Length: 167
Image: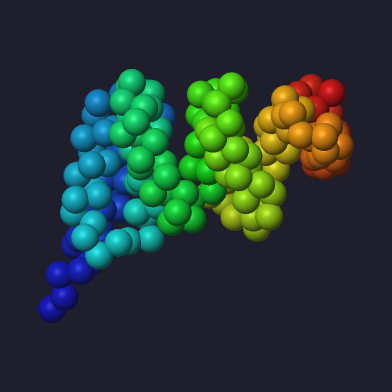
């Protein structure tokens, strides 16, 4: 008799509870539940990416930005696309004048442009990705940045022509 199923069921239940606490903005409880799910998930379940993402976001919201960023980076490496989007926003906010963080934000957003549009791990939507990336390009100092900004803004407007952010 295998013991894998109860562990998987426990991880799924912890993920469900962690989602609920996250939605209700109960950050300490979400962090505790999701941390427990990661500890119990030694084998690396399919939900591990989402657990890392949710715990990372809860940590950021709770004020532990450095620790949360580590979880978000791990979720992004594991393929959770919304983690890339949130990291890009964090890095863009931190790196307006610091080139390395700004560049990391651009890299995350450019990766999302090439991502599978049907991947449900990106909640933001392609238009928001384009508008965020276009904004970073528009603030850049390279000679081709204005053209790149216009191009990506147009791509975003093609995805969502009525977007106020795109106009």
